[in-house]
Length: 78
Image (tube, rainbow, N blue to C red; front, side):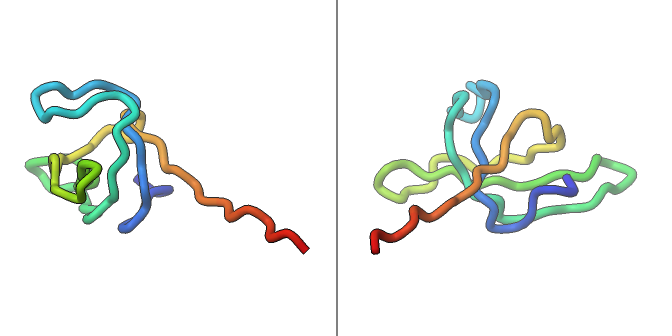
């Protein structure tokens, strides 16, 4: 999880119906954690609905399941 950091915005590339999440859902990384003997390194991502209510928080240990979204502000008109 070297390229994704806390507060990054990510999108799911898979469906995770048990968590109520689908491909394309957008969330914010709220924690990055290292590996332990009990679990691999990963992230906790929080997903909210259009009203700002938390829809789900889920652990992601496989970076291929998400993509980091990049923000590029539009150039201002002169």
